[in-house]
Length: 268
Image 1 (cartoon, rainbow, N blue to C red):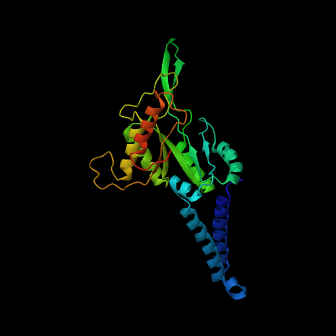
Image 2: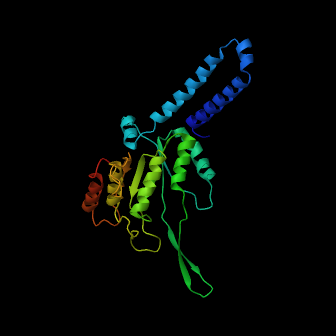
Image 3: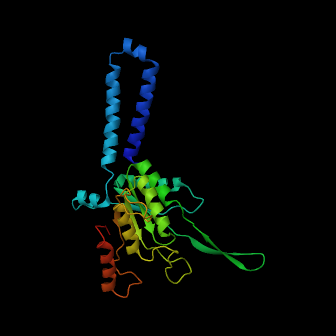
């Protein structure tokens, strides 16, 4: 079953609209024959609906705020992968619906950069083509927030994005009311020995973190924007308890983590 809050929202909205339509259609009958004042009934439904909406808005928190509110209690959250291209959101809902009994405060959604495939041509040569097998991260986040009434955290990676595309993606997330992001460098493409950044893209996660921080300050790439509207993203970063496989040692790995966290308050 979907989350209780999402069910309650749909029930309240449908009952509210249905009641108003009946009341309007038969308003004269209600006024003459009802023992209950129609205005009082409207007030009950409006109050219930507005109370639920207010509660929903209050629970749109930053991840750091969820941690602070937990007061040391364990929080349970889940991570989902976008379905393979050609898949359906129902696959994700069927997985998440029974997990809502654990009341996760948020769910994060991974992002996957394009991969290269080699298709054999009639000439015998192979053509290199870039495809994305798991698109839909932002759309999945929006669907999760709408269905369950909880926060969704998209992964934002360096690989596959120029800095302009990153800015546009952040603007889309901001407009959707998503205020938490997990910033990652991302993995190397399949069959590549090391991570290769996009042209005019970020090579390291610390640079991606800086860009998000700049937008939080109203600083955009276009220098002609003098008073840009600041975003309000809570920025998550990755830490590796067993050391990142590319780091030469633990000390260096910790230094890289500090660089990401020293930019401004972030979570890891």
